Image (cartoon, rainbow, N blue to C red; front, side):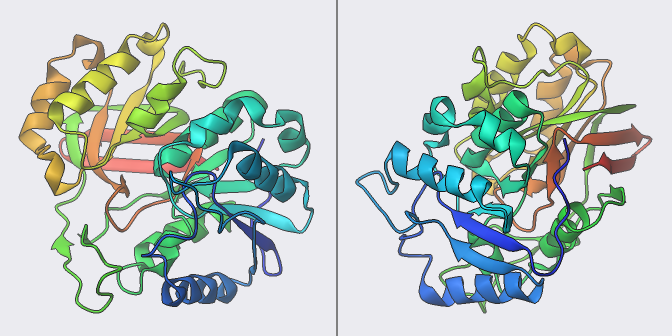
Amino acid sequence: MIPRKLKPGDGVRILTPARSLKLHWINQELQDEVIRKLESLGLVVSFGKNVNVKDDFSSSSIQERVDDLHAAFSDPSVKLILTVIGGFNSNQLLKYLDYDLIKKNPKIFCGFSDITALGNAIYAKTGLITYSGPQFFSFGEKKGFDYSLEYFQKCLMSEKSFEIVASKKWSEDLWTKDQQNRNFVKNDGFWVINEGEAEGIIIGGNQCTLNLLQGTEFMPEIKGSILFLEDDYEAHVATFDRDLQSLIHLPNFSEVKGIVIGRFQSASNVTKNLLTQLIKSKKELDNIPVIANVDFGHTNPLITFPIGGTAKLFAKDSKISLEILKH
């Protein structure tokens, strides 16, 4: 079930299913920049009732977050639900959501990091394609956002299939502290770890968050999938290894078609050499294509991709083609 693409005049509802909007680095200047960008796309911005509630966990109560999600899905003027930022507790909401309401009111739901739990659970429970992509916070970036915006529009404002091409440069600096003096690094492109070609349904996002769904009714079927996986600076090689191994142990992993790995932050110390050793050590991955250093995860810029959509992957002789077919 594909939600209707965005067009001028559509409403976007800003929600906080994880952390609150009332965080010190999401200042008014940043919020104004976000609203300016969204309005320049022709979108009408509104906020959930409880986005500024902040408890001792920098969040709000389960009921407040659920109420805001239900209100957004119930509102016919809202066509895009955009989360503010990630966090640690989106999976608290899964048992309390009205999935029939969501299924009857399909609309675009977009976020990443901890929002992976919601995006994959909604797809698993309703069949509604959700999206991993920029959040409200991301739109506040004044420099280096063009690539992110381009793929946001390709995925959410057009029905055409599109190829994902590596960005020319990337950054992991704390840009909210200084928007003018940024540190960008030349991108060396996607890495081919295992050669091959595949077409499959996209499942994934933040790997450690996706793994929270294992063994529950909220875990999507991975049979026939291409897994898109990333993690933040806390995921060193051993952490990424054990989390990937956990996915490999799932009953239908033998029918996974391929793996696309997002860019690691420098603090993870996951080099191409180490990642290649890790992937090559797992015989279950021998016959599927695996590429890495793709523009999604906890660095900037980032692509938007559909959870439940379809991707086509080709990787051979250092040539890589990654195309989003259905979104």
